[in-house]
Length: 311
Image (tube, rainbow, N blue to C red; front, side, top):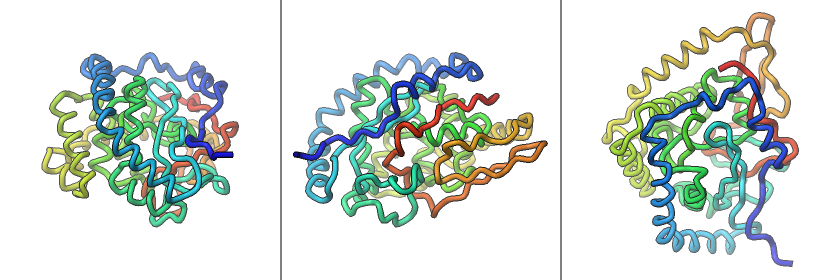
């Protein structure tokens, strides 16, 4: 029997429904700018146009993956989109098959042995993300926006980082300011920095900003440092000072929430025991983060996106 070309790593439909059923999170109150709302349809048209020439490199990359390692070429993975909508994301496989079978969901460590030789090349030039043009055409994603997170991580981060849910006000993107400005997540502070960049983008998005982000992304694909190109196009760490200060204020003003729900927490995170007055959270990594891991855990073990906590 021929092996499957597409590996499905998605949550069940019941879990997807649960993602929007929590009455404690008012997704309808999450609003984005008029620009983002009015250009959603334009992204679908541009995505369809781009997919035509990009189908050639996608086919070549798919052939390399097929010839270099056993397993599917493309896999489908569940991600969290605008207002908590769960959707299926497409990527080129860059890891060995069933990479998280023994660990559950984890961030990828530096020099991760699970990444195939071809996968390292694809990740370096971000070619593994090209199939997400399909998600743009379907309307689940846009070209520029906050990167979509996995339900396993969203469940935890929504509890650990006040305001994290607010990034779901916009459709997720293939690329974004956070990706060109900041290094991959290695701890909760890194998550806060990227959240600040995402919230600043949602608030100030416009044509010129999208042009700059897309240009920076293409330059990065040719091996130019993200920090260098971001400074040239007006993005630096000072750019996120204001939203980052607001995030820290939210954390200080947040009422005690009690112990963080540790059920089905990804192996990347370890939840500290909360005392009676506050919930202290520590993120302990298995190693320096390089890229979000590719393989999901057992679909039945993925928790609801919604922790039911006040924002």
